[in-house]
Image (cartoon, rainbow, N blue to C red; front, side):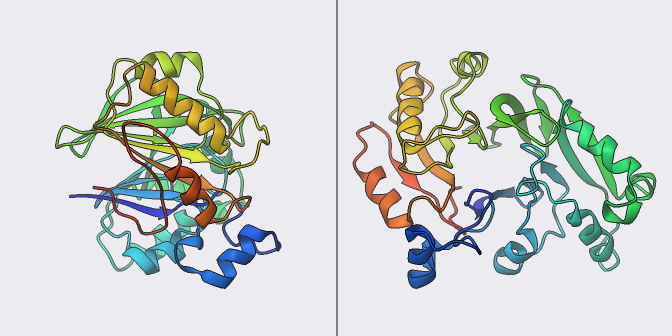
Amino acid sequence: MLIGQFWGTSAAEGIPAPFCRCPGCEEARKNGGKSLRTRSCFRLSDKIMLDLGADAVTQSAKFGDLADVEHILITHTHEDHLNPHMFMELVWGRAYTPKKPTHFYLTEDAFKMVEHWRKTPWIVKGILPKLEKEGLVVFHKLSFGERIEIDGCGITPLEGNHKGNVGENSALYLIDLPDGRKLFYGLDSGPYLPQTLEALKAHQIDLFISECSLGLSDAKNPGHLSFPEVETLLKQLADQGTLTAKSHVWISHISHRTSHPEMVAAAEKLSFPFPVEIAWDGLKIL
């Protein structure tokens, strides 16, 4: 069953960031609501998650348990997207739910992190090899541009412009939904690589999710996008036919640099033939 819910929509620091008193964080503390953001992840369906990061325990308390989840697509190895503590949560939770395997999918370069975890006693108490042997956790390698099928969805990872903990480029996920629509989950990435823009020419995206880690600032970061850079990206994709009047865009992975009301106001000023909205924790789009 498709769910399509943003469980978290912040960048790595969360909003409000615990050590920060910037205007964005203070606005979130004062007004709460949609301004409060946990670290980014997305519930695609009852069985599929995109990322399982630093706030998954808190998110599951708000939005529902993870007992039915069997497949977790990892964008990259930063801890706000892939939290190894969740392997221990599987151990504890599967004592009371069916002991079925949970499948984790990472690109080939990101798989270096798995190989590191297997060798160190300091990650999940050194029991990852035991969990694999028991079939509780299963890891799969993905290749950029190669489509796989997971629970009725066609999944194609495309190469993002963002380096993870082991130097891998992030995976941006192009997803063919069972109802025929196409969803694109674009966290994390700076300006898109030429090969990724080229690959997207072959597709018309119905539901497009972009990061905006740098907010409304003019700051530059090779692995993230500011709001002006998101606008440039959307224009590129519209010009090449990837985004059309039938598309719908949501902006996520938002940092504390800009408050939620400011982001909403900026999005309302955009002039595209498709709507562009600011996502929030709990928003459902399917």
